[in-house]
Image (cartoon, rainbow, N blue to C red; front, side, top):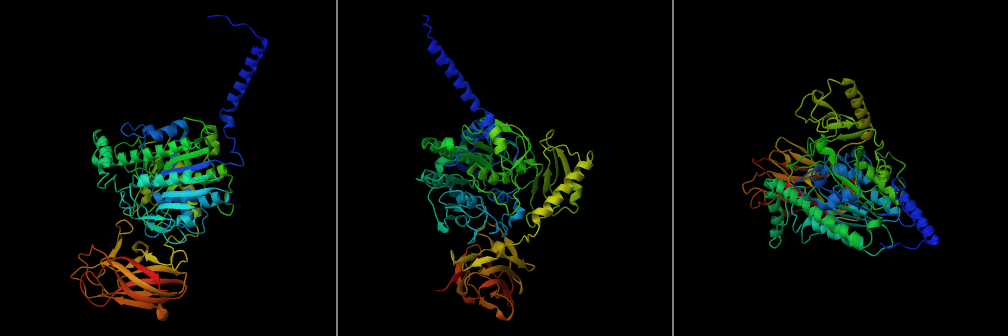
Length: 607
C-alpha cells in the first residue's frame, strides 16, 4: 500500500470533520430524541387499531406460527410498550382512545343494548386535532354512536368511511358501510377497502398535517377472508397455509385474517416511504381488547371480555424515525387512555382543562426509550348489563394486581378475589391473597375510590334516540335500545341490524324506547318484522307518549314466509311535538302463540 503525502491542512480538516461527526452522533442519541416537531409542521399521525387481535397474535410476541412481518417491522423500527392495556371489550377501549378518559366517564357503558354511544358532551381527539390544524380521517370501525349527532363526521372527522356497529356480517361486498353519514355498499374485502380509503386520504394534496385512524374490524368474527366468486381462492390460499402448520380451521382463519391486516399495514408503510412522509409521520399500532385466538397465548391467562392479562393486554408499537429510538421494549404499565394526551402533545393541541383526563402523555417514555414511572394504577371493569364494582374488575399498581372475574351466577364475588404479583407471575397462576391480605385491602380501596369517581353522575342507560334530526331526519329505531316487559318478550342479538324483539304473545307485553323529537311534525311509521303464518290474532300497538297526549297506531301485520324472513310494512302516520317522549310497542287483544318478531321501527318525516 503506497504511503500518502502528509498535508497539515488536510489533517486538520479530517480532525474537524471527525469532531463534527461525533457531535452529530451525540446529538442524535436518545436524550435529544425528545425534541418537539417544528412549530410550522407538526408530525402526521397514523393510528392503526385491530379488532380482537391478541397480544400474542404477532411474530414479535414469540408466536412462531403466524406471519406478521409489517407489525414486526414496526416493533424493530420503533418502541414496543409491552404492558399496554386496553379494556376487556372493544367500544370501551375506543371511547378511551377518543377521549383520553376511562369509558365510565363518557356515557358509554356497553358494546350494545344502546350502551355503545359516547355522550355529545365529550370532547373527541379529532376535534382537538382539527383545532390544531390537522386533517382528520377515520376508516373502519367506529362503535361509539350510530345516531345523528354521534356519528364520526359529526365528532371531528373530516372524512369517514366504515361502519357504526361492533361488527358487520359481510366482509366481501360489505353492505353495512357508511360514508360521512350516507349508507354505502362496496366491492372488495373490508381490510383492503379501509386501507385503500386511508391511503387515498394520506395522499391527498394538502398543506395540513393529517391524523389517519385506520380501524380494522378484523380479525373479529365472523372469521372470513374473501368469499366472492372470483376472490375466494385467494382467501382460501392464506387459510390453507395455516392449516398446513397444524392449526385447526378456526385458528387458521384468525391467523390468516391477521396476516391480511399485516399485508395492508405493509402497503401503508410503503406509501409513506414513497411519498416521503415516513420521517415526519408517527405510526402507532395496537388492538382494542384481548385476543380470541386459541393457538398460542404467550404465557398469558384469559382472553377477550376477561380482566386477566390476556383479556386486557394488547400489542402496541410506535415508530417515528429519528425522533424515538428503534428496537426498544418497555414494560412500564401504560394505557389506551394515554393516546389522546400523547397525540395532543405531538400536534401542539390543547388538552381539555374542564374535565379529568385519565391518560398521560407517552412522550417521555417513547422519546427516551427508558423505563420510568408512568401510571400509579391501571383499572379494568366491564359488565354486560350494568357497570358495577363487584364483578369483572381489576386494579394493578404495576407489581400487584387484584381482580375478580365472575358473572352474575356467583352469589358472593368476594370469595373469588385473586391477587397476583405480575413481575414474578405474569401468567397469573399463583393467587397470593391469603399471603398478602393487606395488599388486597389497599388495592380494593383504591379500585372503589376510582369506580365511584368515574361513575359519578352517570345513568348508564340508552340515550334518547333523535327523531327528525336536521342532519338525518329519517331514523331507524333498533331493538337493542328498548326496555322490554313481559314473561315471553325477549331481545335476540343477531348482529345489530338483524336483532329482534321476539316472543310477544300475551296482552301487555311490550318494549319501550326513549325518543328525542328534534323537529315537530308528522311522521310516517313503518315496521320491519317477521310473522308466522299461523300467528296469534292479537295485534301490535305503537304508542307515542303517555296519557291523554299520546298518539297511537294499531296494526295486524301480514304473515311472512317464515318468522325469520323480514319485510317492511307501513303502519300509518303520527304527529309528534318536539321534545323527549317515549315509544311503546305493545301487544293488545287476545290470542295464542307468537305475534311478531320485530326487527326495527322506522320514522320518516312527511313533507
